[in-house]
Amino acid sequence: MDGPLKNLLVVDLTRVLVGPYCTMVLSDLGARVIKVEAPEIGDDSRKFGPFVEDYSAYFMSLNRGKESIALNLKNSDDKKIFDKILSKADILVENFKPGTLKKWGYGWEEVNKKFPKLIYASASGFGQTGPLKELPAYDMVVQGMGGLMSVTGQPNSEPTRVGTSIGDITAGLFTTIGINAALYDRQKTGKGMYIDVSMLDCQIAILENAIARYLSKNEIPQPMGSRHPSIAPFEAFKTKDSYIIIAAGNDKLFEKLCNIIGVPEIFNDEKFISNSSRAKNMDELKKILENKLSNRTTNEWVSLMEKDKIPCGPIFNIKEAVENPQVDARNMIVKAYHKVIGDFQLAGNPIKMSTYEDPNKRGDIPDLDEHREKIIKEFVN
Image (cartoon, rainbow, N blue to C red):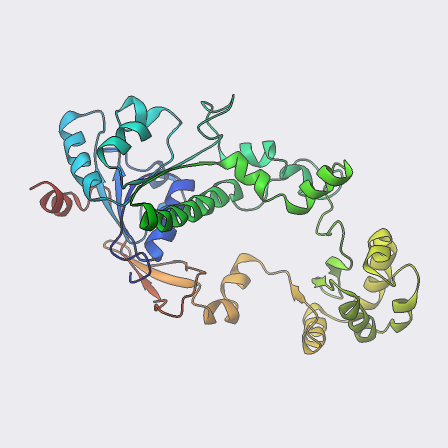
């Protein structure tokens, strides 16, 4: 892949999701990624379904364009190989439990002494400091502890996980951001640095409105379904055949909405004349709007509202979302090649850059230890 990170070498000591997602983004931005996996076992996600001809679609979706070598970092011979690769690397990314790599001789202090220009990024459940630092964590653990599950779902429903692994993915993205900032800093200082990203920290960082409400008003937010706590109308509404999302986030948009659905009189009603008044009367407003919205299908309403640039849309399932012409136009479903399966479809890179192409074909998907001979020849022999 060509990109702004071309000619940078990333050593990927990660597995499952948070770390591989980070290094996948770095690869999509042009970096060369060498994935160092445990011998015989490899990345844990190689065993995760769904499977295509006995190969994990989960693993393939996160590890396109990477090279794989199997090394045991407790073995002296393998450590020599690893050191040779690290000596040429720009970035090391790992998501082991804190302290694990230090036991093997690859903690930040040891690595920094040998390779002072190396950027070393660690993503873990709770970070490298604090009373919980040694505990393991999975996505749903931090969704729960980070408060996200407390504001997800319908009122009075059982705890509801966000439908994607947002605990892992946000940590992967924040790690990527930290690495890119460290690369810029290295241009000025000539030195590498250590990046410590906690999955729990990342959940706190994305709570936006919920954390603002608590810290400013001492209010503890509760689940509200699809509703926004302070903007109205801003939720899913029933139509004749399904639901429509309407996000009329200001007075001008609300006036347009009232005219389109045939209730112009409520725009000047004191209960709905401003966003603050609408937010106080959400239940009544929803009844009025759904009474009118029930007369047409979702597609009919979307067509009418789009003409007046009212933010709205249907609720797609995954098939509908993936096959959306807009998604296709943005090249968000791409292909990567696997030597047994052939072309495999997966999600593309949402970062579009004017200087670089956004190809539909990405780098190949590696089998475990597939690139050993090539890597040994390049870095050791």
